[in-house]
Structures are given as C-alpha cells and as structure tokens.
Length: 306
Image 1 (cartoon, one colour):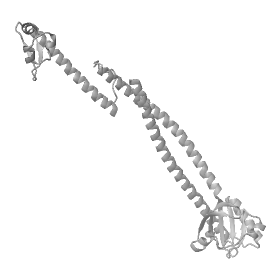
Image 2 (tube, rainbow, N blue to C red):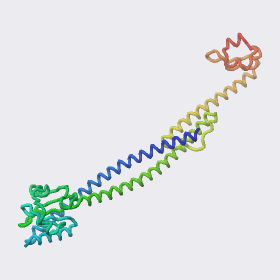
Image 3 (cartoon, one colour):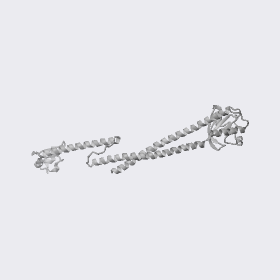
Image 4 (tube, rainbow, N blue to C red):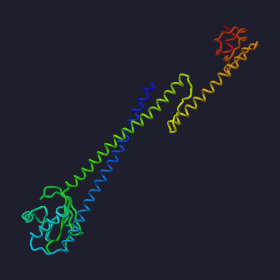
C-alpha cells in the first residue's frame, strides 16, 4: 500500500512540477521571442534610417551628375556599399537610379512622387513604409530621406522583409531549441524532486503504518527541515507523547493491580459511570466474579454474580 501511495504521489508530483515548468518556460519563451522580434525590427529600421541619412548627406555634398546613367551607377555603388537596395528619386518623383534595376528598368519605373515614404520624407524629413514591391515582387521595408541636390530630390534605402523574416526565423529556431533543452532539463529536475519527495512520503507512510500496528519505535532517520519534514516531525512527536502516556498508564495499572492482589481485603474500583475497572482476587472470591466482570456495571455485577 505504501509503495502504491509512493508511486501515485510521485507521478502526480512529477506531472504537476513538469507542466508548471513547461508553462513557465513557454511564457518566458514567447515573451523572449516577441521581444527579440521587436528588437530586430527596430534595429533593422534604425540601420536603414542611418544608411538613408548617410546616403543623403553624401549626395548633398557630392558632384553633379551628367546623365541618368551616372546617377544609376552611383546608386549601384551605394547599394553595394550599404548592402541594401538604393533608389534615387528626382524632385518630381521620377526614378533616376536604382541599384536593383538596370538602366532600362530604371527608365521604365513609374513615378514615385506618391509613394508613402516619399510623401513622409517631403513633409517630415524622413519616411518609412512596409509594402509590396511591384518591381521586385516581394515585401520591402523602405526608408526615404530628402537630398539637397539639383537632380536628386530623395534617396530611398530598402531591405527585403524576407531578410527580416529569416533573422526572425533564426531567432525562433534558437528559442525553440533552447526551450527544448530547458524542458528536458525541467523534466529531469521535476523527476528528481518527485523521487526525492516521494521517498520521504513513503518513509512517512511506512512509519505511520508501523505506528498503526502498535510499534511506536522512533524512526532512526530525521524527517528533514522543510515544511513536509516539520509536519511529519510534529505528528511523530504527538504519537510518541501519546505512546509515553499509554505506557505510564499501563505501568500505573500494573502497579495498582499488584498492590491489590496482595491485599486480603476485597477491593473493587469503579469509574465515574459505575463500571468495574479493577477487582482484586479477594473481591472476586467474595463476590464470585470471573474475569469478564471487568467493564460491566457494578450494580449489575453485584446482583447477578457469575
């Protein structure tokens, strides 16, 4: 019975501890992943803003361009230098250079004057936008800044959101891997704790079973200093105290019976309810009482002796 109790307790304790750890780790992992995603988005956006402002500053201080070909070549050079798509937009919205398109493609691109990032750059000095690029057919993150140049009104720097998603995917994969290892470690710790607590519960159950059989021998090992150990120790102290009192009562009764047995006078002892508790040999002989008289009502015994 104690072994079954131990097994059931250990399993329940393990399940509770394991799922508590899983929930805590899942919440922590979700919070970490969400925080990392926001930080990655902010970092990439800050990088694009810095690159757009740097490109705008370089173009404002740079030379005049003789043709669209020169401007497209400069866009290609800056795009390779920054590792991003760089687009030059004239003050009227015409595209005059793009690092992701050849010159023919640049000439065929539609007017960008109404693009959200260009409008924001014109009104506030900096524009940002996330949207689908019809030219590249992928989602892009755009940052545009105004340029103090006669031929170039705005410079726009962009990164494919696929790059952002790849970085986020790498973060999520690493987070899931870390959560997997953490859950495995949590399961091992939960099993260790459940086994440790379960052994103590089995020890307490075995001691309680022994006490129930009447063996009040104190345990050789302590119960520990935690809450479970303190409760078990308090119960053990109470049982030991009850055992000591019962032993004292048994010794007192045996002593009294020995005294009464040596008396020639007949002596009987009754309790508050009038029941016989002790009858010495002389009283048994006088009243012709047998051993079954103890515990019976005194009046009934005297009237109807055995």
